Amino acid sequence: AVSATSAEGGDESGQVPAAEAATEENRATGALSSKVFFYYIRSVGGFVIFSLLCFCFLGVEALRMAGLWWLSHWTAKDRSGSEEMYYLSVYAAFTFGNVLLDFVTRLWSFAMSSRGSRHIHNAMLASVLRAPMSFFQTTPHGQIINRFSKDTSEIDQTVMNTTIEMGNSLAGSFSSLVMLGLNAWPILILFLPMLRFYVYVQRIYNRAATESRRLAKIFHSPVYDHFSNICRESGLSVVRSFHEIPSQLKLSSRLIAEQMRCENTQWYVMMWYYQRMEPMGALLVFFVSLFVAIGRGKIVTPRTAALA
Image (cartoon, rainbow, N blue to C red; front, side, top):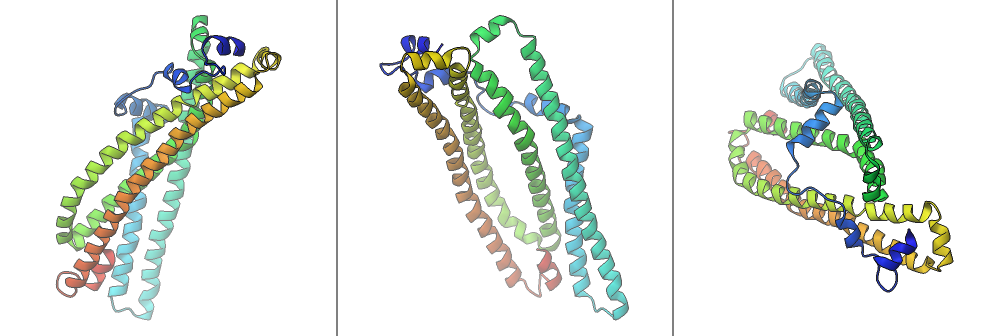
């Protein structure tokens, strides 16, 4: 298999361009289809279970904000010795409830992730086992190995972790906006011009990040396929017999380099996003602090300043 590739599809050094191997694998374009999200939600347990998980994220954030509100209420009052234990008990209850619910939510989410991974893996394995022999003749083995190794690993580890981070971020942002609206509502006016810029940057980042991850998945397949062709049957004996070890090493290095270009591109896109989001976040914090300092004693009290 290796010698035939070197004689027919390669250049003078017996190498097959990585781009030609990568273009054999089709990839989706544009935004993610809603069918992908719905399929994953059904795999982890259904819409009811997933909705309960979302409410748990909101509950964790609600308990955290309730603890902060109670702490500000506690410090704003004149307290006697008999009342200290009451305020402390309520604050401890909010804190303990927050920690316990967060632990249960994360444990439940990982159980859902394991269930979804098993369902997707079993469905994919059943499809491959029922495929006709022509499928294995026309599909490079590297693509099949890539689906069952790299992609399955990301479903096991990355998808649910990303979902947890997204849930925490959305719940935290929503609770922060609600708290600002209740305690320092004029500052929300400054958020409106920046909201459009945030949406604009977010759309650019989503398109670039999605395409770079798709390309990274495609360029994993030639690496697996090349290694599989050498290891199966008499591939290694053929390589040694025709003295193709140097050329195959160069080809392997080239395929890995093409793969790492996509991996590095993902980091560049992420850094581009952070370079624009971090200054905007710092600017918003500056405006909130400036508003609290100017409106001290008039619009903002010491108690609401702590919450803002």
